[in-house]
Image (cartoon, rainbow, N blue to C red; front, top):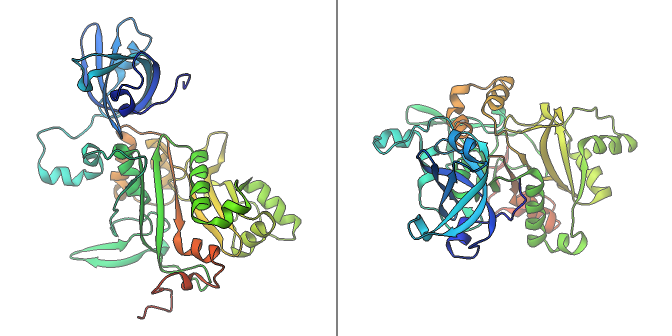
Length: 393
């Protein structure tokens, strides 16, 4: 559908595209319908613009189906109109519903307690900061697992049993529906009984999520981030190698490894791959060895659209990929993993109300520093390391 340039709403409101045919992506903030015209207020992370769909427009039928908080991609001609919010409107001739929202539960007359219970949806209407990626602050206490339940640190939270966060990913996904591109730099906690040079029970995590993004968008973002931070990457390999899991298995077999298709890589396998290729993205993993939120490959249901960045001496530096954006698929995946649907109801809500294709990644800062500085262990990359045996001082 992207025959015309994709632009941000703020660019239109600043007068840069008057008279031009453009495309915008966003969510339905308000909708008003008459016999001849549908008025849609569309918001993205930069602003709100009025889009009009007339009865003779090819987009008329789809405009009639649109609900509050549906995610859309619209194309049309930018026109100046003083009556429109912001002074500009989009005369729409093409409309694609990316995620048709169910009836949105938030109205003007809701109690504060109810709004707090659906805060993952209410956050969409907070003040939108006009940046490409917005830094946010996720919670450290969580009620359900993001990764495997075996690596959770449990604690007593007044009269409830909660956990320390393994990852901010699920909460970052809630925030992309208002801010579109978000990141955080925050602690994560993993109760992994691993005594290796690359494992900590508490470590600092760079995580990012973006609406309307693909797994390729995330690889480019990670590549640029690592290149920017680490001069070695910028100098030695401007582009990181990319291979599929299948090719990685074949390469390991040629090196004498006995790993079977469907098994995850350990440190030895990762070290062998990166020793030959340098920093390398490995993607299209078997679905069974990846988390419930990983999107299934559209051409092969046995594969997940997940990607790991593997670097010499350290192994896995980042994990990312496309997230499940379909409600029914997410519920099915939760059941496959033996997880309780009610524990993830708020996360399922994100797929009910204006779902969009999206992707993200997580990077361990200590691992990046250990690789970049050629340190003996990640414990040398943090002032007060926490491992299975070390918790003092």
